[in-house]
Length: 305
Image (cartoon, rainbow, N blue to C red; front, side, top):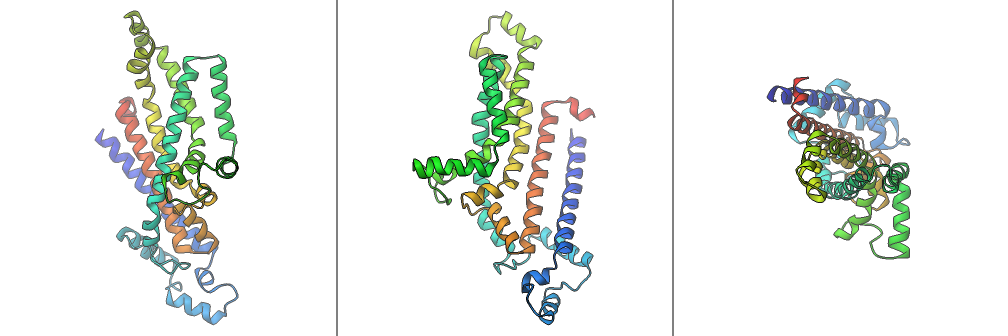
């Protein structure tokens, strides 16, 4: 088990390094940071002075090593747009994004697990078909469209929840539903498939022969084993929620990392954009690593590969 974990950690570090290199190179090659700071209408002399002042006249590989060294020390640089340390901007908003991500994951679990279980226990019936239809519909609906519809219905026509902001838990209800609904289809289908497979296994038939029925059979024997692959998938989904919150936070005007990323892109704030890309990727890599470790812990056959 230890060797497997070390291999996965080494692979995760290599992926994180590759992402950091790609983010830095793409942003610094596609756009001249000096123009981003001074503006395209600035005089060439002013742009050259800015280039010298910020060290942008140095070779690209030297700037990358300086940036990577600073990131490892916790120094993310200074924002061109807000003129503040990027680490301060991230620290001010990371809590909001994590709150939204965990709330969205709760929505996914609350909808997908019961829906998948109901579909599996009522296979090939109208319940199964309805659950699959709901899953397909949720996957086909874009987040921005669903968010606008929910705002019209439950914030304008029926003013139950606030339209925007992040001051109270009520502000997170609609965005959490929007962000969590996109993960319902894969989790629901995995839950359905896993429970169908478990219900047809030998130990379930043995439990039935011993007289176990209904909720006792489902909760004590079937559901626990069917949830094993779902747990690892939920870890990956949490990483996607953190990195995929840009649209949802923008629609509901939530001051999290997603909205910060959009504002930084519009403001050509390269230091902030590149660190956010790196952090989003790092969270996703970490959640994939956690999923791999959970899979190996739950299924010993994976460690032998």
